[in-house]
Amino acid sequence: MVKTCLMMGASGMAGRWIQWLTEELGDRVEIVGLVEVNEEVLAEQGAKLGLRADQLFTDGMEACATVHADFCGIATPPQFHSALAIAALGAGMPVICEKPIASTLEEAKAIAAKAKETGLPCAIIQNYRYEPNKQEVVRIRDEGRLGRLQHIVGRYACDYREHGSWGKAWRHDMDFGLLFEGSVHHFDMMRFLSGGDCEVFQGFGWNPEWSSFKHFSSGFYLMRMDNGVHAAYEGNSSAAGITSCWHKEYYRLEFEGGTVEIGAGDEVRITRVGQEVEVYQAPALERAGHEYLLQEFVDWLQGGPASATRIEDNLQSFALVIAAMETTEDSLPKRIADYLEG
Image (cartoon, rainbow, N blue to C red):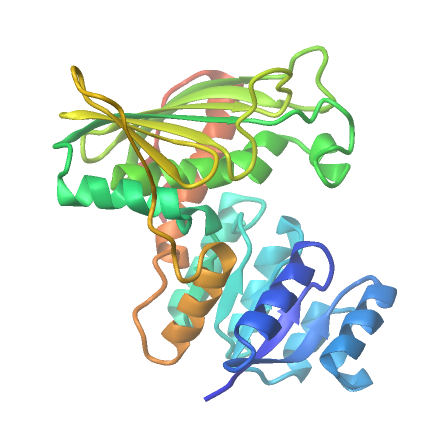
């Protein structure tokens, strides 16, 4: 049965959502309402989708009160996520939303509380989990091919030294842009690769004098997971040399019986002391990234298992962003359980 969708957003990432939903899942999803503040973009996308004027909105609240859809997709800037998600859930629509969950922990918890109150599915996009090399690393861990996992080192580095080079100027002007727009992916990846949730978090953030950012563009952060695995993360949006930018982030996992490295592409490198390095391509995925997550969510709506990135789980990753922000300001270790209470 085809599921109907109220789509919040129509340009940028939201435009790509529309493409994925219509081209990759067109036999399972129909967009029946569209919200976009840019009226020119709204009219253009509405025409492509064959929507009537009464299916097009510049106000998300009006759309939630008017459109009766099987679910709501939200791909707006983060500051609008909470109000829109709560309105959609209140109108009886399950929600799938872009990361980060919201702008504040309080807003994120409010969405989770509304999802619990209504009993409706709510999932957050964490597309980086669903890439071949990351999935292969988790298989290596779960199958015990190299024994027990000791620690993880992750590195993200992009050259955004020119203002506006990170897609939108507001990313350079916002507070904690590295954390909210970048590290939100990478902290979740540390959870995914480690197989645990963070207990204690600590680190430092800074902004070099040559940065194009008004706030911190770089940071070092440490995590101790509840399964004994430790993790170290380097984030740098002012990189001038060796880069490990989007979809090319470097991860090194130290196991009991060897080291696994992944980075650009789908190559996996396994090094064991005294042996030749084993290099191979991770098995391909039928669907990856957003396509996987959107399909997984529709499957959930049709009676399948709950999304792995459902909001209850993803609050753990979002709490790391808030902890990173606070430890950057006071240099004190943070217990993640404290952020998830209440």
